[in-house]
Length: 328
Image (cartoon, rainbow, N blue to C red; front, top):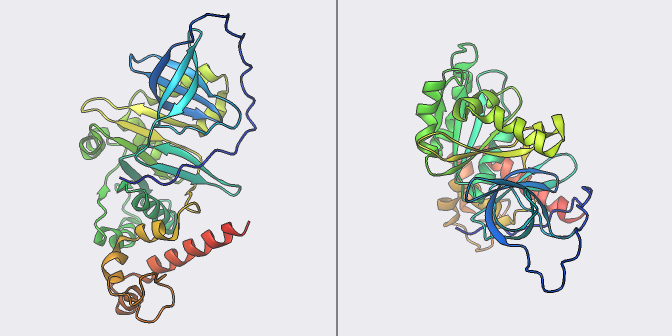
C-alpha cells in the first residue's frame, strides 16, 4: 500500500522539554525501545511499549518530524516514565484533519474508517464525501454507520441520501448506539485485529458509539488528562483505545469537522473517486483532468448519469481548493 508523502508538523508553539544533564564520559546511552503512539496533544505524545507500560514522549529537536496517533516509533528511554521519539517507522498511510487555519496530520496506519452519521440532526453531505475521498485516496476501507435508526422522523430521508454511497459499494450499517450489544455485533468483527478511525460531526452520537465499543474509554481519557495535566483540553486530543475481544484498536479524534485533502496530488484526488476508474479508461488524453477535455470518458459518464453530478462537483471543488492552496 503506497502511503501519502509524509509532511512535517509546522506547529512549534508547544515548548520543548529542557534537555537533561549531559551524559558522563563513558556512560552508556539510554536504551532504545519500540512503541506505538496512542495519544497526542500538540507535540506531547503518549507511547505504549510492548509490555503495556506507557511513557510521555517528546520529539527530538524543535524541527523534528511530528508523529501521529497509530505510528510505530523508536524512543530513547528517559527516567522512569518519559522518553524521546528518535524515529517514526514506515507507515502504511497517514491521514490529515483540517480547520479554518491549517491541515495537520493526526492518524496513521489506519485499516478502517468509520464515518458516523445520524437520522437527526442532519449530517453534512460535503463532509461525508470528503471523508470517503480521503479514505479511498489513502487506500483505507470506509464504512458508514447510520446512527439513531430508532428515530422514525428523518430515517427515510437519511436512507435516500446514503443510497448513492451504497451503490459505490460502501457498507451502510443502520443501528442505534444506545443498543450496546447490537452495536458491538455490527462493528466488532470488522475491527478485530485492525485499527479503525472514528469520524463524525457533533451530534451524530459518536461518543455513544465509542463507549459502546470501548467501555474503558472514559477511564482511559481521564488517566491521559491527569498524566498531561491539561484538563479539559484533552477532549480535543486524538486517542487510541484498545477494544475488548475479539480485539482491535479504535482511534477517536473529537473536535474537528473535516478531513484535510489539500495535500493530495491530482492523481490521489482522482483515486478518491473510484467510480471514475472505468470511464477514465475511455479518455482520449492520458493526462485528462476530467473537467473540460474533449473525448473525456468521465464527462461522458456524467452526461449519461452513471456518475452522480454531486460527486463530480466535489471532485472539481477539491481540485480548485488544491490549486488555490498552492498559490499561498
